Image 1: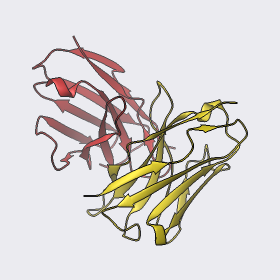
Image 2 (image 1 turned 180 degrees about the horizontal axis):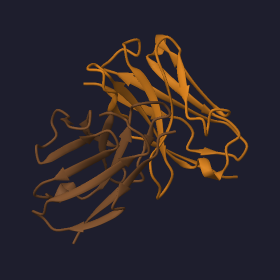
Image 3 (image 1 turned 120 degrees about the horizontal axis):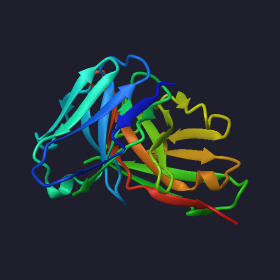
Image 4 (image 1 turned 180 degrees about the vertical axis):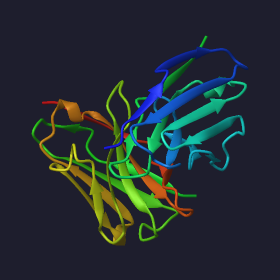
Length: 107
Length: 121
């Protein structure tokens, strides 16, 4: 199975800040990497797929990059609705696997 | 608008079988998509359970494979999850989701709201 390791596990930031979350795969997954936003009581929300493709309707302040084993999710200018937990997930092979999540909190 | 809705018992006894159904509207379950189940135990991360294609082909998480069955009912436009021999560790919110892959890159673009299933006597 492909393991995904996210860092940091938690992050405190202020409104308007720029934050970066990283995701490292245990083997190359090309660009088969997806990012989801998860809020309590809600299903995951698709943000980025194919490592850098922005899902329709997602604000442009979300940006994904990377390929191979190292990936990043960058949120520029944090908005109140961005405080949530973020998960990376690989679709290179089954079983599909997720990172452990990064909880983004308000400082 | 594609919508998915999970349904099933919210409480299952230990050693019993968890059974959930996902009703799909706004899309045909016979379309060229994989249909998945994902769960999240309280306070923990997301875990992929498995998926089914309209043809009936399935893929399961090896950690659950011996206990999981996913099936599809095209006449009702729904798919189902059965998880046998449950324990407290199977207590989780269970989500169904549609996997889109129109450009070769799989991703879950539509999700159900999730349903909490507790395993307890």
